[in-house]
Length: 323
Image 1 (cartoon, rainbow, N blue to C red):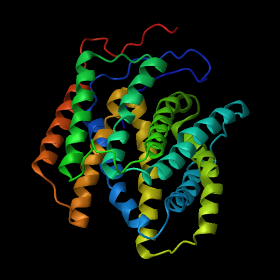
Image 2: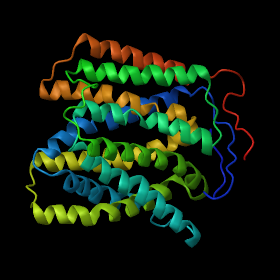
Image 3: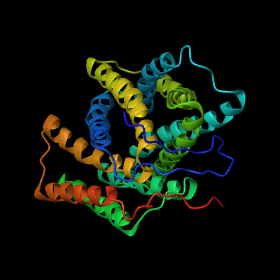
């Protein structure tokens, strides 16, 4: 893996001072981004399999019940984080993973799939804004144009899948609000995990934050299981294994690595590639039809990716002075 890194202060409460990551990502990092987009994108059809027989919170709990023990194995023998860091790891896990997953699971039930895809596409925008404020990573007008082009591309991909992203008749205000909270929580996790990973290591941060997040939504999942006993099938087990091992464990480690080797705005672009891969895979697996608008949206997303990855000027990512 590449050795470029973002160096930040170890405390969330101190003024962050970030050094410049490499502005133009290497081919290895581009490959890692594409791999992560595939891993996370395939979670869409795999989740569909699981939700055929399990309610959302139970499915999420099963996924993390597989992921958490595996993550804890990775930190066996490694130094434990100091006690002063535990509250910050807890906040990161409770809000970034726990609340993020709870609101996402409950929000999905109250909105259409097309509206959900569009709201999820706001995550890169939130990450860019938070990174600009917290890590002082500048965003050029060309890169802003790239983010906008990609967002429009996601709208087109959604419309090309037979959904109407502009029609909110099947979506409740509560569902939309919960999904927006989830998007903010996941964006918070991405940016603040950079600081904690720099101080304590990505593996430690991933394992402890995921554990705290799992403990957050476990009581709600337990209530759901009590109210609706789960029906475990081979499809559910396969979906849970994929979501737990590939999406959560491998995906989170790869994501934290990317956040340390490329600017946050570039790493966030993975979020725009996921709907393309997820919708395309779902079409192949479930026989959905894709139109010309889907293809046009894919092209626009790729154009936005090219614009976002290009740096303008030698010091495009040099941080401003800490406030």
